[in-house]
Length: 281
Length: 149
Ligand code: SF4
Image (tube, rainbow over all chains, first blue to last red):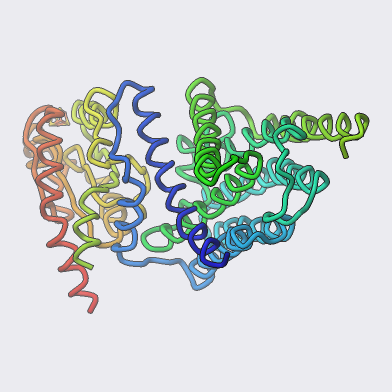
């Protein structure tokens, strides 16, 4: 059991890295380009680690390391089959360290990015939290013991994960914090070299956690179909996010927050109310 | 570290800076980043951020006003770094020879690794230059570590 957890802990972020490479390739194909090699995100991380470290003060580097540590702890707890709510709060703490790191530098771009990252947190965290609550009331909050029929019971919660992923993957229409065209990567702007790589790894762990929640929705009868389903679903979600990215333009930050707090929260609420009225929960 | 350096060649993040060119070379540099010449095939992306850049694509003859800015940008790029002078202007300042307001080329201000000639430099030549510059990456990385050590 522990060995399985360790395997998930290591393979999870690697798969996320691979999905990032796939993402860049598919996006390139959609734009009629060839795109980078599939392993490009790993090359980038290796390159960043070989650059000379450069930080603006002690805090900046420390926050980056904390961000990675908390995200990895959240995913580790998930891999061990632990409490989803606790993992969620640890992961949120990691996201807050990213914001703190951005605030710790005197750059206005970084501050703007941090403000927007806080707005993004405000937008996706309630939805993600409600997804976890919905998973919990349908069985158990422990990742290792959730109900095997989540897709039948709360399909709308899975749907609500799509906009959450769009925000986390920094894709249009909600690539508000990074905003490549105007803020030059927002909260990441003052980071470079190894510290940028550490933050990126933190992001991989955060995404692994969210994809992990999505994998709880599908189960196969045998071990092989189980793993296959659990692999296919996150890639399907990623593909949906890529398509949305390529057919939409960026919306304003207010629209992001209001959409997530109405449509996102609403979807899950409707699902839970219907479940309650029909006596499923 | 050797392995990291070998992998690093595959991920050249670009910073493009115009030091007062006629925009001819800038258009060609942008052609690299757009679908036709798609430099992301080699892992290159335009980061528009000196702190995250590995290779500087500099166009223009460096006007006196731009001199300090160019030096400032160069100093913000963490080692190892490469500099590519794109076009005749950036290489020698030729079209603006003896003008009172230009420095006559990028290498008068910061060290240059690769010169790409042409007015304007063709995208094919720029890709050649990029590959040539990247062949120096491992050596640069080693040198940067020795200086630090
Ligand atoms: S080399 Fe020619 S095309 Fe390029 S910036 Fe100079 S004048 Fe313009």
